[in-house]
Length: 212
Ligand code: PRP
Image 1: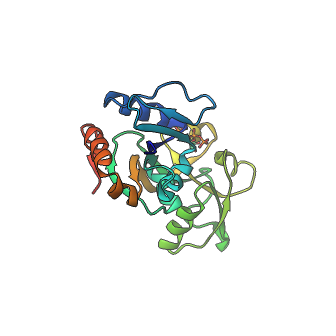
Image 2: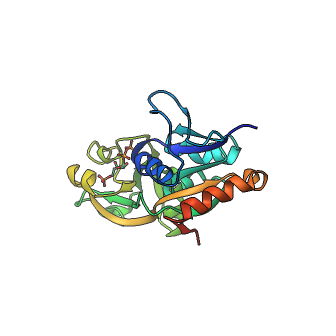
Image 3: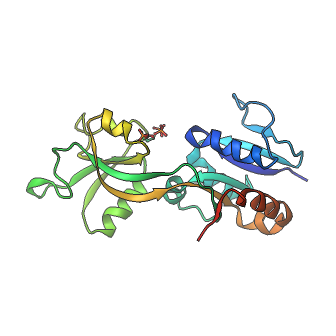
């Protein structure tokens, strides 16, 4: 039988995620380096290490059975996956920010604001839900510099400590979404490999909360 595969996110959620699995007897064997598939302490379970935004896609497609990702990328991809557990770390927020002198929530003169973001779907959804027309400028990184260079009036990005905003002369205007590390699961795999799924959920739930 193919190993039960757990997709883990690179980046800021990686260390707390492998620490969580290790504390429940599912340590990773070896260092990721350039290797993307790694064994765990249990020969029936292996880890797949990918970009955080790709975790929902791997899990939705069944290429991974379960995964860990942030609420931000989960909602941005809109993946159809189960969300059994909130993991209690990786807290941050998706927020609108701008230069303090840039008007908000409407630009002067009735102009349409340009909003730079790595989260075009959530940004469109948010501004549509509050009835404010904006032009979304999708970019893949260094979003905080966009207002400085005149690419956008406002940005939508993750805020954790607020340091990146401060160091780029930006202020938070509005929170769009509270985010946290979340366990996701493939719908079919949850049924077909129920024993392994329940074993992992019960181990991790000692340190987590059931999703509402
Ligand atoms: C995120 C986010 C901000 C920063 C916010 O980027 O895009 O740039 O963290 O954190 P702070 O409020 O503590 O400064 P990340 O470092 O995850 O890397 P990325 O830009 O590659 O997504």
